[in-house]
Every structure is written in C-alpha cells, then in structure tokens.
Length: 197
Length: 304
Image (cartoon, rainbow over all chains, first blue to last red; front, side):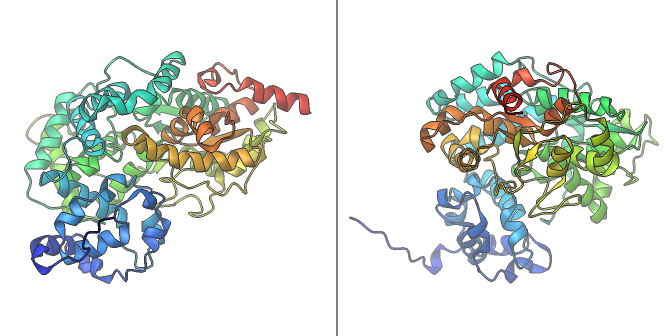
C-alpha cells in the first residue's frame, strides 16, 4: 500500500484566490465559518465527495486553489441547500459552491469532459440561442461530449419517455430570440460584479 | 374568478407534461384561471448560475418583466423555476445597482417589453409574486373548497408526499422548512391515506446528477424508494418534474440495487387531486406514467 503525504505547504497557497474567496460574501462573512461540519453532515452527496463542504471551505479560505477547483465536490453539489439552511453562521454555502463552479469554468480548471460542466455549458448555450431548453437535445449533446458509454443504462428510460409522449423532438424556441440574446450580452459588458448572497 | 399568470418552464412541455395537463385541469375544475405567460423563456435552472451569474439573473428577470405587464401573481409549478424566479425577485429588490443594470439592459434591448424608440425605459414595480401551485391551492383556494369539490375520495390509497429541495430551501415563504405540510393537507382533503411520517420528504432526489452522474443519482433515489417500499406506500406524490422523473424513471435499476421489487407510481399531487375531483384520467396524463397506475387504483377499490 502506498500513501501520499496530506500536508500542504505554504508555496501551494494562492493568496489572490483566498482574497477573492473571502470577498464573495458581504462583510467577510466567510471568515465567520467555525468549521463545525454541519454542512458536510447534512450534505446528501458528501459520501461521494473527495472533500466535503467543510474541508472545501477551509481550503478555500487558506487559498489552496488547486485542491478546491480540482475537487469533485463542486460538481457533485446539486444545489439542494441542505448545508445553507443548517449553517449556524448563516453562510450561503450553496451560493459559494456556484461561485466556485464559475471560477473553475472561467479559469479553465473544470475537467474538459466532466459531465457536469459539459452539461452546464451545453445548457447555457442552448438557452442563450433559443431561450428555451429542449431536454432530449441537451441529453444527446451531453452523451456525445462526455462519453456515450456512460449512458447505455439510460436507453430504457428514453424509450419509456418516448412511449408515453413525454419527449419533444422539436427544438423549442421563444419568439423574441434576438431580444433575449441581446439582453444577455448587454449585462455581460457591464463591469459590475454581483456578490454572492 | 381569480386568475394567475402561468410560467410552465421547459420541463412541463416535455418530461413533465402530465404535470401541466393535471395542473390546468385541476385549476379549471376549481374555477381558477391560469394564463400562460406570453413568450416566457427558460429560468436558467441550476445550470446557468454555474456558468454566468449576471446573465442568469438577466435571463430570469425577463420572465419577471413579462409578468409585470399583467401584474398578476405568477404560478411556477417546477421547484427549480419557482426558486430561481423567487431568488431573482429578491436580488432585484435588495440590490439597487443590479436592478438598475437589468432595467437599463431590458430598456436597451427588449422593445417588446419596454416599448420602441429612444425614450424606452423599464422599471420593476415589484408587485408580482412568484407562487407555487401548492401555495395557491392551500392558501388561496383553501382545503375546504377543495374538500367540497371532491367527488371521488381516494380513500385507502397510501400516499407519501415528497416535496423535494427547492420549494423549502433556502426560502420557505409558504410552508415549514423542515416538515412541510401543505401537500399533506391537500392530499388528505382528496381522501388519501397520507403517510406524513415519510422521513425523506425534503431530501434531495439527485436533481440533474441523474443525467450527469447516474450512479450518484441512483444512490440518492434508492434511499427514498427503499424507505417507501418498506412502508408499503402505494404512490409517492411529487410537486416538481425533476423529482418525478428521477423517482420514476430508474425503478428497475433501483430494484436490483435494494434487492426488493420497486414499482411505485410517482404521481404529481395535481394528478391525485384531479382523480379525487372526478376528472378524466386521460386529461390528467395518468397514462403517461412509466409505472402502471391502474393496478394500484384497482387494489384500493378491491380493499374498500
């Protein structure tokens, strides 16, 4: 059996990341985390995570960007808010997870074929262009881009959905597609940062 | 007649079709108007927020802006849509800079909302509330009115109410966050034998992970279904299209996993209310269930 040292050194820290992280929530509320672990204890996905939410918060605050943005934790979060409502310090943990997902995607740290960021990007692209999501196309695109073999077990579900008339194969769109695309681009140009709540 | 604007969201036009069918049928039977919001767009769900926050807010805001035109409350049946629209509404209310940014962007790019020409401007009045059908049926229509309209009480049908995450967390304006009861009361009014002790009524169904990481999703729904099997539940009632699809779609795999046959129909609470109101099964989308519903209903009839 081989073991790897779990000790992280000062040189692995990215102070800019730590400062960015602390500024996410107003009044430096993230410094108020007492590491009680209630977030991890309440997280229904914690058993699948390499770092639970508590460790993720601790490493983020110290600036260990590589550990945080390379963890599977941020991609496993389903936004069920069990952590947020349980936190005794009222830290919006789920919103922080969203911010970490965005940071990973923006800085290219998201694994290129990981199904969660692939799905998020496919979703965003379809909605930006058409204004609505057509489920069947989202899933087809996801399977093609993240590895089709993982989806063999879902064929039966697809057949059932077709059989019961619950799949639309017509790509849905809103009428004012141009207005919506321009609206989304208009807010993009602006320099204002939205703070996490 | 009371009337609301109706925001279906993308799922109710696809996998969640029986939710839309039964919702419209039940509201019509109770004489409550639902007018589909003209040219609504996707709410962004959980995916858009993971990519771009400002665009996600703008996307959801367009729906709120459209709803402002009639000024009626907006009914959003999907839990994710309901939360995104409510959160966005709160952001716009609490953050004036963000509100200004979105309003000027709408004025500059959406003539169909703000009018044409150089003087185009837009402001949110903040008068539109985003409501879930559970909220409207429980608080506006009322349990008593529902009870009076029931012609076919579903007595003997053991139903576990499952609320999912996002209508109780992080906001819970119309129900108890830890032990929500609105659906329990509505189903009781429909005559159901409500399993209010079902312990997982607000635990995550796996949401979009069922698509992206199916093994993880199966793990989460197995827990929910295994408990329902052990309690002899006939039907699990849901209020969200993603919960419905996750709980229903993978039962053959769950059966293998928990080593117990799992064949529990997962019905929208509106489908059950519709049955109790004596509405046509086809109009309620009952036949769109993957797990056959008739055997469960027949068993109940033979127990009577």
